[in-house]
Length: 248
Image (tube, rainbow, N blue to C red; front, side, top):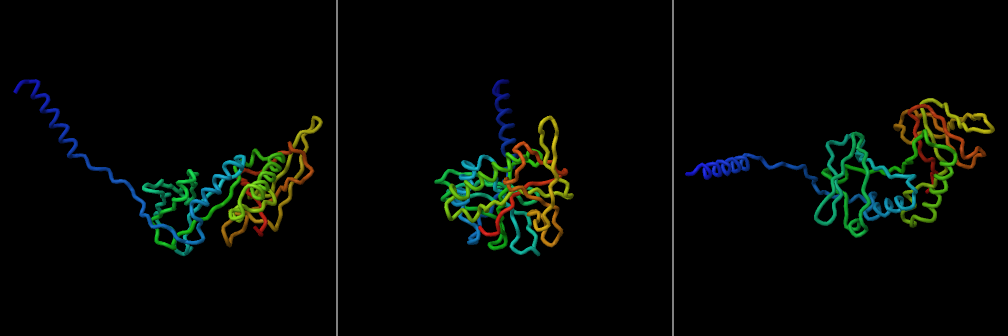
């Protein structure tokens, strides 16, 4: 055998050995046991709600989803979840708190889509929470009024009747903090004016754990007489949410 043929044979042998030695990669799979719980909307409607918020919400709102056990005494194990449509699925990766986002699909795909999970039927719930995207440190009265106007328009003019129950009737923008130290400040005639805000004892932090004390909260409705430039000053760690009517 010539040196050239020997070199070629050696190369082929090495390629063959590497190929046979390589183990196929095992990918995680989602067991497609679809939830038939009537409390969970078909994905077509979830997608419709997400799409309408995306187009008409001016970037002020987002829907946050969270996995919850149907039986609180039985914590969730390792949950795998995916959005399945037609012959493929889109993996959904919850964070450490089991919180995740869902994508907006083309209408045709969304009609055929379902959420698939590896959990036993009836053991898992999905809770949707409408969140504000405005950081606490960027809130001023102009933004409060914009949020209130947009929320009213979305609920009363944009959403069809069968989706309005998932968008609350907003009463104001709530801020909750460990300490009730808030004020609004704004410049006026060369001076910096400020007005303190009071905690509402009847309000409760929507993120408070059931059975535990709530943080202090106060709400701005947008109807206050303070100028648009009045900016919220709040303690570190404060969080904004929407205060909504109990009747939807």
